Length: 261
Picture 1 (cartoon, rainbow, N blue to C red):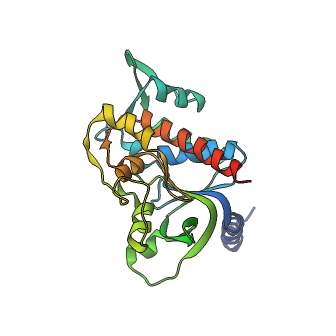
Picture 2: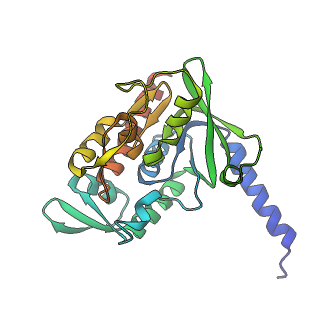
Picture 3: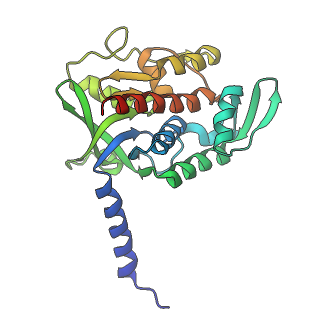
């Protein structure tokens, strides 16, 4: 069969247009395709919600690809291993309470399972702003990452969402936008982003779960964005807290959405 370049191009445009148009109104918009964002999106879609995930980079998976200092292995504790088990990701016991996993298998499986479960992922898209209605986040404003990088004056598009999740890691990109553009108080001690502290794995892992919550009406934080927002430590290349945080925020949002209907 002879190939027609026009049909190839048309197929890509048509399919992408269908995907984008179907995602203009969702239950939850997740920003950040790292481990906590992928896990969050997966568990939410399994509960029957319509989910779109936006990742500013070309690749999905955040910092997990590189393991620790480009040694592509990660460590999880007993609780985190249970999440990997549910995704069918292989782990090896190292010593009591510690397990290792191949970071490439982990990321690729998390991504594949999320997409196959029904999560729509848009890479190369950045969160430029939020939609605010009264005192509540009610959507996301997105643009191409390339537009942002080139400093082009191109207007963005909007995504209507009942809730937005900031899973952007250390940068807390979405919460930072909200704080910068609006005279609001976050649900933190200071009413502002407190900021990330230096590495302390034991405390950081516990605090990641405690800090996984709503930070402003309609806006939730998980993973490292949670610790950076509420002012706790980073944990380095142990990822149990990140996985559990994604699972935890999905439970919180599920309860909130179901109680509001």
